[in-house]
Length: 162
Image (cartoon, rainbow, N blue to C red; front, side):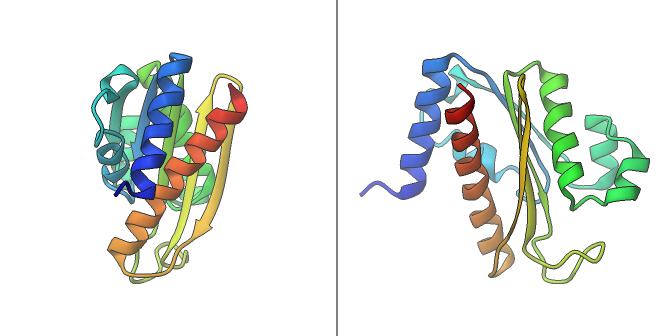
């Protein structure tokens, strides 16, 4: 039986291939799970360009050129950081579309942000869309739920924009 996640991934493959769009991802809290999910099905190389895992504040600065002052002002777990991550990975890779995610998987607050708080952003030549979400559960449950939510948001935004 096909899972809901596989159906979602198939839809993402279909829309990116049919529109001939490329995709890059910047992951923090999900540490590569989104990229893993995108490549569960054959043919991902037709649209999936690259992924940058930038788990620490320092790696966000070093790999994505996000300014230290911005991270200090807004925090690593913030909508502003998710937007910067999406815009910078798209700029760095030249992809048509980019997806980013940052958040706190728990179990304790980070930067006064509660466990389960996640921010997602999708960047495209027309702009950047973002949203915050809160998930409950264990670290692994939050990571899984956040990854699926990010892919759903990606599909939703690309469907509307193209």
